[in-house]
Length: 73
Image (cartoon, rainbow, N blue to C red; front, side):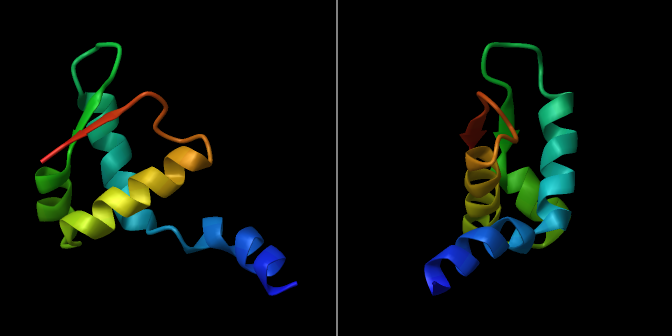
């Protein structure tokens, strides 16, 4: 039961500040098959750690956001 509840709440726990800035970087990336999001730039703009930024993007990708993107440091 707890696993079901955790799975339904998890998307709500994503870091919205990180994802908002990541989306701006995603849109600003040069057009290619895999738009690149620079984790260092994302971390600098949001104050979150590289790992927090990476995890937020990966989790959002599992929910359909940032399709076919590439992460770089």
